[in-house]
Length: 522
Image 1 (spheres, rainbow, N blue to C red):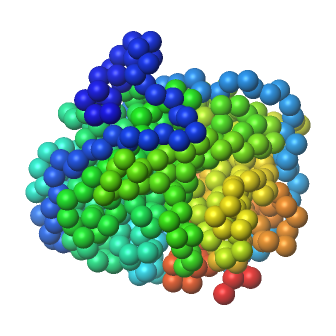
Image 2 (cartoon, rainbow, N blue to C red):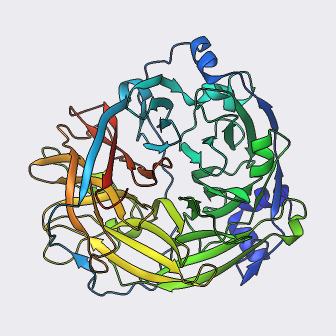
């Protein structure tokens, strides 16, 4: 199937469905769409390009949000059987760093799409529209710099615009930085850059890939041994689309392709598996893609095997349905804003129709594990609106089928908990960062909870607040759209969490970074 046919179908979705030109996911889908790069090159050091860049304009832009397609069916109306509202002692961690990064007055976009990643010697923070680099003591190395500066001199939209939905990742396997953002001001693109060294302020191998006239919204990126994997919500067709980028070529700075499987009406907001830790997945293991199922009692897992030499060998297999305890959809299940803040009638969004970034993967030797979370409604007896459902999936032994190992709903009788991100350290401790507030007297704040392997399955220890908000969002109903929890590769113990909050009410969110570790991990 060519990109031309795919793009045409996305423009006339109903007609294509009638003609049978949009395939449905069978047990194994083959014949991916092969997308050739528009161009690639190698940049000057970012530190040099940033000095040459003109000052960023002082703007406040509310990023457009696309209406999610209906993708939940057969809703089971049952009480959440794994809700947790009572917690024991505070989570057994030691707080380390806690510092502010870029603000809305510097970044200019709402929501900030705050995320970050920790590398060998640096922490990189990225938001709509800015890129900021710190050392691992929290000292700034690169001041907030427009993301498109990374593509200075590249030409086209990548070098002139900031489309948003950015991701930064540390490729632990190659000791490189991976940066992505979308563009939609002309051709719909993803712009991807891979650093040539472990220095995030150095030079980059730069690429752009076209989706034609189909906006690749809400892209999520991951590192796997055989590729960089990407998921987008394709708003030509309106559905989730899984892709693989030629990691080997991009690390080398040579010509690269991207392979995508056609979007399907039952799929939305995949998360691709992102490797943590020193132990690789089993040799030749396909990347995993997980989405919320079409009911409130399932997750869907898919296997993406890519062959860049012979695309006819590439496959996307699934869904492998994983049954989970019933949960109640947040805000009616279609996204939307329903989370109250104190002192204002403005409700903010939790994107309750999709899983939150990342799908963090680890190989523990005797089993593989993946963790993820999403926002749901709390259990009965709560006056709050939002809670967080989290999952640990396992394959035992490595290479086996994936099943639900444990799950729980982090809930409160009065506090909203939403926009979470979750990861695990090398000994199996789990940390979940999120936004917290209540509608009467606690402004949106940043906190985290977690558990150690000896805790009862499905139970979290008591949450800690990282920073208490002293303002609320009043300029729009946007929040997030995601946060990120990463694990320091130097010790494989220290968690770094990135989330937004307000110091003052109005237009000036603050991106915050905090690090901590469990006392049991050394």
